[in-house]
Image (cartoon, each protein chain N blue to C red):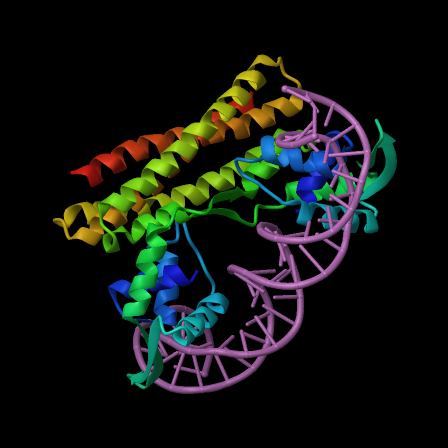
Length: 172
Length: 172
DNA sequence: TGGCTCATGTAATCTGTTACATGATTCT
DNA sequence: AGAATCATGTAACAGATTACATGAGCCA
């Protein structure tokens, strides 16, 4: 968790609220977090001197802007070089489908249709992100953003193909 | 968590150890759990009369065999009919890749290669599962197992295609 | 004026993992 | 004999969510 925040702050100073927004947009396909974990994490990062806080007022609104320190950047780089510890996919949809024999095909079909609509609603955001990023002529970071957007696009397309096949099998 | 266990017990009575094994094989692509959560959950299910326990000895080994009750079956069916609450994908690989601009392409390529080998190592298990399930002439539950195996297969294949594309982009 | 977005934070709770402790059987 | 597997369980801890509490500015 600390490292996601450091990663975002590496590029620009942000408030906790803005960090949350980044996660809900750019990272949403593969990472998420709530305010209840973001704010305490920011405090602990400040405590460890990986980040500094700066309180200010903007248009009458109180804000706390967080900025990464050199130590923070180093910490991030070390973590980035470490091998990945965990890639996790946990889909309740698949779990319910696995036990579909207990309910009959109607309920399973409903789960598949719901899954399909969620994916169909998300896909345009990923495609839009890809499209935009492909248009930007090579600023180094964008290439990496593009990779993750492409991943999401491919995976969601695979999901939709599976939905078609799964529906066919259950509708028999 | 309770419902995964109820689902597995619906088909056959099992020990905690066997439940763990099912999760590490049939469910591993989309669900996981440790002994530290399985045993306490089993106890709470017994407490709620959704499951009964039967202590016995098999070839000199002490075992506790858990069996689902009618109330347990009902509980499971209700849950299966409820809409899905959460499908979550949380890939550290993508997170590290997203921040790849901070480290340069070598480290990112290494993460992609590691990801690729993990996927390549897993894919045969899913293919084997699909193959077996397709061979069984229509016992109702197998059709549902097949759906989840097919999902895994498609997704892993999409992952591998993405790996090729991602490597190409970073190797430029 | 009411609803939405911006903005920060805490407390209770939940859910789950890791590490430990123990010990028998089975395979090589 | 030693390693792997079978088998059960607890305790400490980690990590995160949810719900709550608060309040200002912006838009219709």
